[in-house]
Length: 143
Ligand code: RTP
Ligand code: MG
Image (tube, rainbow, N blue to C red):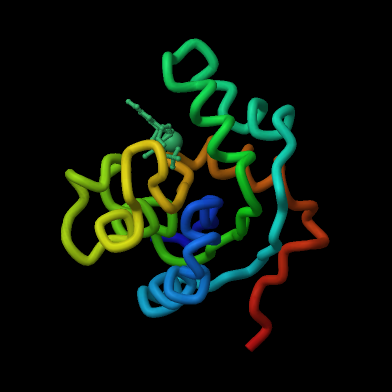
């Protein structure tokens, strides 16, 4: 398996609860490298664009309210099979269904406030990384 990049968010609930470091430690423990990272507070327009695929879903308004409710951390993770590896670290969308030891089991409180986001496929990873980062903001390891 080639080295892959994926896009990740520490959502407003987890930032507010001071879980940034604990979540970053899970990525690093799993061998994923953080090759870009910044804190941002999304505008409604930026959040709506990010979740455009869910525009017609009944939870869309609540999702945008939540994602704009406070700052988030956005990061690019790099490693072997990074997209699937990150989805496994995160656990199921609904924390009630997330396996023990996953981010959502340990840090999420509900399906709406579920602590983290991770790209679900190579196409979405490429699109989401470019939505937040210029290539000059991504720093592959040199050692
Ligand atoms: P994410 O995109 O945030 O990583 O989460 P995901 O892939 O696991 O889930 P997705 O289907 O893409 O849904 C995006 C976010 O919308 C909220 N959601 N609510 N009430 C509901 O039935 C429902 N379904 C999804 C979740 O907060 C989910 O993370
Ligand atoms: Mg998703």
